[in-house]
Length: 86
Image: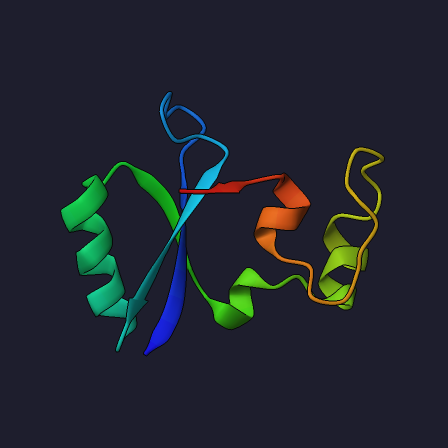
């Protein structure tokens, strides 16, 4: 089983700034589970490797924003964007 991470749209008044984890055998199975639980009103789906923020990615995309936390080993999308798990 793999873990897949889903984020919600900023316009979602109930779940903005939140994420949800689904465990599934495949990307498609995780997506189907997510749609069954939350419909299609969510934003992005990530696998484990995309959920983590590499140091290089942080330096290229995020380090110039003074509101972002400093990068650390194991940083995730949730850490960077202050997302809460639901």
